[in-house]
Image (cartoon, rainbow, N blue to C red):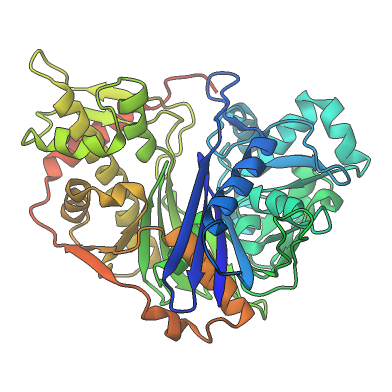
Amino acid sequence: MSVLAIDAGTTGVTALLVDADTSVLSQGYSEFPQHFPASGWVEHDLEQVWRATLAAVGQCLENVNETPVCVGVTNQRETIALWDRTTLQAPRRAIVWQDRRTAGLCEQWRHDGYGSLVASRTGLRLDPYFSASKLTWIRVNEPQVWRGVDEGRTCIGTIDTYLIARMSGGREHVTDSSNASRTMLFDIHQARWDPELCGLAGVPMSALPQVVPSIGGNVRTDPEHFPGLALPVSGIAGDQQAAMFGQMCFDVGSSKCTYGTGSFVLTNTGSQVPKSQAGLLSTVAWSDSDGALTYALEGSVFVTGAAVQWLRDGLQIIKSADEVEALANSVESSEGVVFVPALTGLGAPDWDPTARGTILGISRGTTKAHIARAALEAIAFQVRDVVDLARQDANVSLRSLAVDGGASANNLLCQLQADQINAPVVRPKNLETTGVGVAFMAGLGHGVWGSRTELASAWQLDRTFSPGDRDDAAHRRWRAAIDRAKGWTER
C-alpha cells in the first residue's frame, strides 16, 4: 500500500508517494508564478496552482507501478481564494499570506478595540498575515467579485479547500481545523466558525467550508477530474502543522522549526490552548477523527529562505541558493554587518507590517560574503527570538529543536542556530517532512498505519548540531537593528 501526498507551497507543488514502510517511492515537483500587482501585494493565479498540482502528481506517478490507496493534502496557510461553485473558475487571483495590503484595515480594527476579541477566540493577532482582512478588502474594493459571494455562487476557502474542490469535481467544500484556525474567523476553543468574527469581516458563514478532521474523514476525489484516481482524502493540514506531525512532535513540549520561504517554530501544547503574552500565536496543530484537538504555540517569521532568494534574484550575489553557505563560510564573521530581512514586514515577535528590510554596519571593507553571512545570522536570530519566547510562554525546557525545510540542509545555518538557542539542533535524513507528515496523517486515517507509535520509528537522524559559544553581542546588535527597521512605511 502507498499514500499520495500533495504539498502545495508558496512557490510550487510537491507530490510524494510514500509506502507502508514509510519510504518515499517517488516525487514530483512543479513551480507556479508569483504575481506582485503593487508594492507589498502578493497573489497567486489559482488555475496555475491547479496545473502545477496536476503536473507534480503526474511526475510522481508516471514511472511507478503503484496505485495509492488514499491522499493527503497540505498547503500554504492563510492564503485566501474564491471560486465559482459550479464552474470552479476563480473571479480573481488568490491573496497570499505574505500580502500586506490590509495593514491599515488591521490597524483600524485594533483602534476599534477588536484585538482582544480576536486573540481570545482565535489565538491570533490583528495582522494582514491572516485571511479575514484579505476577504474584507475584496468585499470593500471589488464589489463585483463579492456579489457572487453574497448571492451564493462563489465560495471561499484556503488552498487546501480549493484543491480538494478541484480534485472532487466541485462536490467537496471542506477544510480542516488547522487551516481554519489561521483564518481569524475560527473559534479554536469551540472548533467552529465564529459568527461575531465573520460579522466583523463581513463574510457570510454559508460561503465558508465545512470543517472536517485532519486525520480521517470521508472526502473523496473524482477520477474524471483527478487523473483517474478515486481516493479518500484522509489527511488535511496546514503545511507547518503537517511538518510538525512529520517530525513526530507528538509529545507536549516537542518543537520543530521549518525553514522555508519563512520560518515557523511550533511547540506542542497538547489539549491545552497556550496563551502568549509576548507575540506568539495559539493555533490548532491537528484534529483526530474523533474531533479531539491538539494545540501548538507558534512563532511565525515571514522571511528567511526568501532572504536567500533575494540575494540570488535581487542582489544577484549568488547564482543558486545552495551557494550561500560556501560564500558565508568564506569569512569568519559578518564584521558587524546586520541584515534585517523585513521584506514583507516583521512577524513574531515584533509584528510590524510597516517594517522593511535593512542592512546596517556596512563599511568600505564589506563584501558580498559578509552580507551572505549576515543573512544566515538573521535567520538564526529570528528563530532564537521566537524560541526564547516559546520557552517562556509554554513553560517548557527545550531539549532540542527538530529542523526541516530546504535551508536546513545548510550546515552553517544549523550550527549558528544551535549556538543561538543554546540547545541541540537535530536534522532528519528526510527533509520533506511537510509532505511526509500529511502522508502519515492520511495513512493513519485510512488504516495504512495503526498508531503514532508505529510511525515514530520512521524518523531517522541525519545529524545533531551541538551548541557552541553564543554571540550575545551580535544578537544585541540584531535587536537594535530591528528597532531601526520598524515603522518605515505608512500603514
